[in-house]
Amino acid sequence: MPKEYYSRADQDIDREERIKLVEKYLPILSEKLKEEAELLREDGLPLDNNCRIDPSQLVNQDVKYSQEFINQIEKNTSELEDKFRRLNSQPKNKEASDIGELLEIVKTLLFNQDFFGGRIKIVRTAKADDINNGIDEIAFDTKTGFPIGVIDATAGIGSKDYNLEIRMKIGGKLDFGLEMPQKDGKTWIVPRPIEKLPLYIFEMRLNQVLEIARAKATLDYDEDAKKTMGLVERSALQKFIEDGKKILEDKDLSTDMRDKYEEANKIFEEILKSI
Image (cartoon, rainbow, N blue to C red; front, side, top):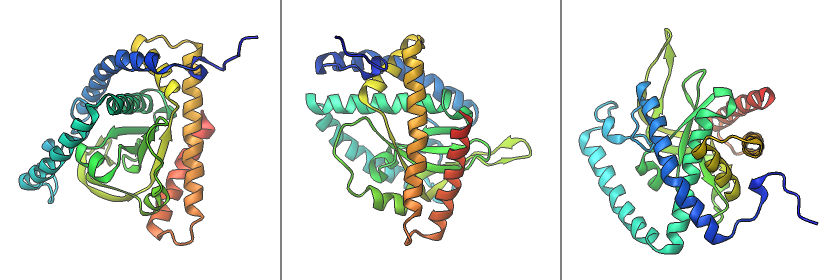
């Protein structure tokens, strides 16, 4: 008797087929990410074509963002990038790197186009913050324009982060952060360094990434794709809430981090009730 699957995302895919699918969808979704970046730039966000915060657009927009400071940060980041690029050129590492990039693109498109009833928007962090501070995205509450947290993602690859609980307790730090406060019906873009932001982990199985990538690439949102997207959205909210509650149980959590996790949890719970 054949095995019954909840959707295509539950089916097994061998490594060779997986590599082909990642190579097929990555360039298509990279173009769609570029389109999303163009839309966000129309709102004044200082982003590059990969939906990343672009430090070169922040010169002198904060007292810390002198040309010299940004040049030094980007020089240090470039050196690390070259090292990672050499490592990722090896076949095994390239596969993991491509999967990670596809996950980041899928996540950015989902959060901004499909999830959470439009309540949350995300942008990818500057390369410097991704590499130096280990943060993938910054998430904003669209009602206030202020960041509610930072997000890291995993598709079940790589090693376990044994420092995760400590990182969540301390909070995320960005050398190149943003706020988007709203006043008199207008959104103001305020670049500035930010620290002590709640840290959340977003998880998707690789098959889920590929199923949603297929739907985004082909614009074929069939029943399987809708089921997968709904499951991922609800699972993400539930995990954000559960992780927030766990951190809030820590008696040594600082007052400001406690306030921020409590506020973020309220938002996630509101969204979960509404979907």
